[in-house]
Image (cartoon, rainbow, N blue to C red; front, top):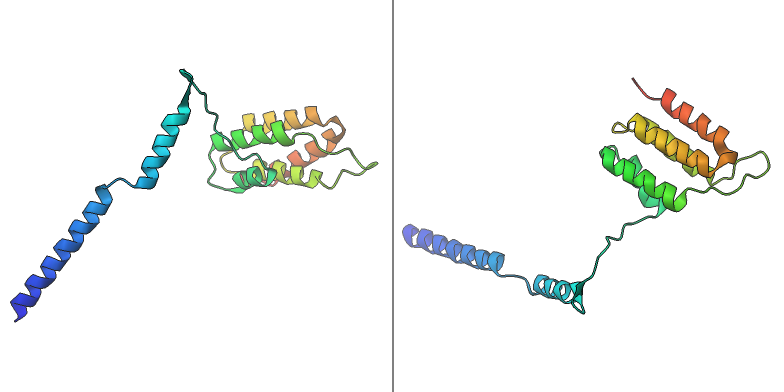
Length: 154
């Protein structure tokens, strides 16, 4: 009685394994439809269409990249370039005070100074680009950079 139960169990497991292997190697219809659509849209009138990768350029997304400690140097550089390109100009000062939105840029400067994968080239490029686009905030930018660099643990 025990041997028949063991044989039935092994046969059931083999059938289950065969079904799973079949599902693994059969191409999904969703994937094949996506591939077919890509093939159809990649060529129009005989000339190839250049596809550009759309990137998320929202300031919150770019800040999240900078705040991640595991972001690479290339990711940091790309995120800072996108910040300068899309969000580089800060609102005008309110008299002597900085605009409240400048706090975001101070946080970015402070965070990038403390990031483990940053280097001097990234810091200087971002600092100079931001100061060039916002000459009224040059003093505040330098102060934020100084605070960030002095807060680093060396």
